[in-house]
Length: 79
Image 1 (cartoon, rainbow, N blue to C red):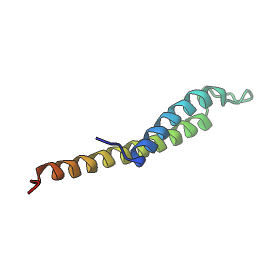
Image 2 (image 1 turned 90 degrees about the vertical axis):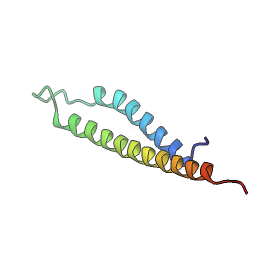
Image 3 (image 1 turned 90 degrees about the horizontal axis):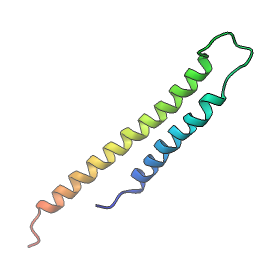
């Protein structure tokens, strides 16, 4: 089954999101802060995860729609 461009873009956003979180969150800290868990880090990580979750939801809905279309096409007789 062929994948749609929406599905491909969603997978790219998800992969880019975890790579961005992996690189950005450890390097984003304030030396002058007395807190171990800075709210800025948590907010940034949550924002990245929310974008990734939205992309995963869109990807899942797109794949479900493609399965339904494929199932309807397969059930029709060619005559």
